[in-house]
Length: 88
Image (tube, rainbow, N blue to C red):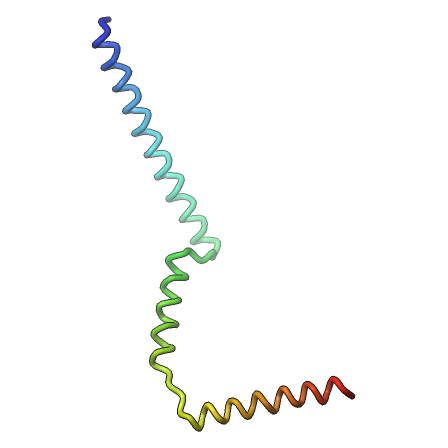
């Protein structure tokens, strides 16, 4: 075998090795994704999608000044009840 043939052979072997390593990595990634999906673990893409939905909902919800005042009064009342409850 000549030097050129040996170099070509080595390149082919390395190329095939890289191809097989990539295929194995892809199979492992796919199996991990499948197992995570089956286990109910949220993926980053799931969380991102939920964050976008939340942002959209936040934009569509608008409280009137009266509703904000009512919520504030309820919060003040609860805080006062806690303080009173802690003192007794």
